[in-house]
Amino acid sequence: MMRAWILPMLLVLCGSAVATGLIFTGSPGAAATLLLAFLALAGAHSPLIFPRSIGAREAQRRSAVDGRPVVCWRPGCTYCMRLRIRLGRSAHQLQWVNIWRDPAGAAAARAANNGNETVPTVVVAGQPHINPDPEWVREQLSASS
Image (cartoon, rainbow, N blue to C red; front, top):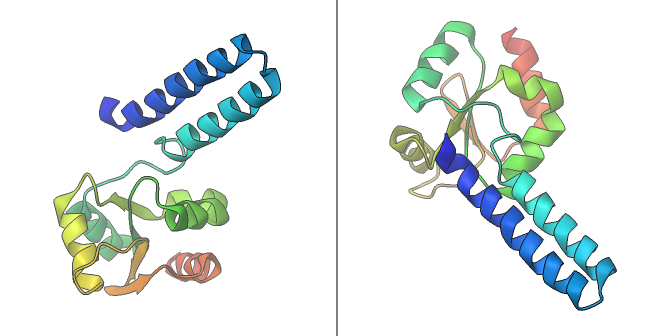
């Protein structure tokens, strides 16, 4: 779990260092703006944005039992963040697979995308859908309930 926080921590530290330097040179406005930008980047790359990831095999097993969609994603992907944010609280009902942490998840994403690791790839009833509309995903989720 600690590895997931390395990049966000580095972004916060670097942003703090640069902002401190700007404050000492007499640019507090620029320092605050830059620090906010670094904090936003750190938040976007942190594990806080996405629900806890599970392995692809476990996600497929759970999906077979309850019919919930499986989402293959990776940290830093703007389309994945858009999907996650637009789904809101219902995102926690999906099975999330981080393809950078799970080789089987990466293989599933490549199989669905002609060898590319294009994400988000949402698998519903065994059928992959690449970068689907969040409203469509929400409909699939309510259909599985």
